[in-house]
Image 1: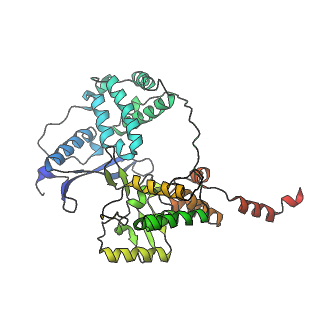
Image 2: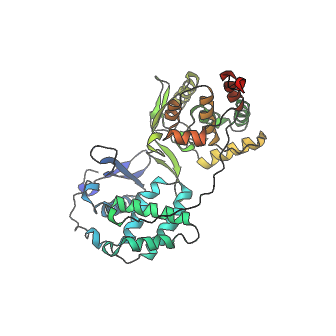
Image 3: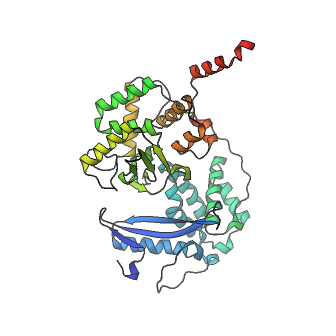
Length: 383
């Protein structure tokens, strides 16, 4: 594929697919230059699909030369940004950029809101768009719930920032009512042992996977997306760099990113766990790009299946708490905190973006331990 017509397109023999890879720069206020480099990766079944996808991305990023290393070609240049159709640009941006950052359920919601905006502004060019007009459209999308308008406003403002049109950002002041989320509970050591025993008996092929959830506090997508390249047998660590997700059409895809920037991290593992991983690496004769955790067919594990097995185990063990697979992450943080591990280490190991999130949502205080600490402090003796 050295032909210039196929630039940015490579053929992946291991996956029998054509991969479109665009090097781009995006705004980053935390860097010295104000931008950072990233890649947009899209896999297609045929060369024709790859060429079409590449051309579609080109049209989007040609809007601002600083966002793309422009492909050399003989095609005529697209119209100036002010002459572009607002709705078309918005939908292109959502399909190629925004949707890659969202979960399946979030994609459906945001697509509905973005479609409403696109329909309302259909046929209007960028030069015809004004802040009052956008404000009116955003408010119309939140007639049933102001929270919907808040999220629509955020999506539109992000789009405008990406195409370097900050002067059009909505300045609406919206106050939504957010229902208080019921917090998941952590599990005791006895409950964890019961769940793992049930998994080992009913689903032995996934026993190691569930143990790793409690050992590492990883998100479901992080462990399922772990490849052997990210396992360091010498240092007894794993590196979290990828996530395994389900797209809008419920297809399993490997994303070369984590939920947040803090999600990219190195996690320490006990020697016993690393020894178990090394055994499977040798037995499978795995390659660096193979998934660590696979199903019986040797393929990537369906994320929904992993959660379903966990819920079955919880019901079988008659655990009445409000828990899910994500409760393993809560349990991981709580156990480390109760053991006296410093908060900043827990934050780094678990990949939380801030201590505030960790403390408010994930730490579940051990009542007996708290009672012991307070009693030893002597506070009660003075009252």
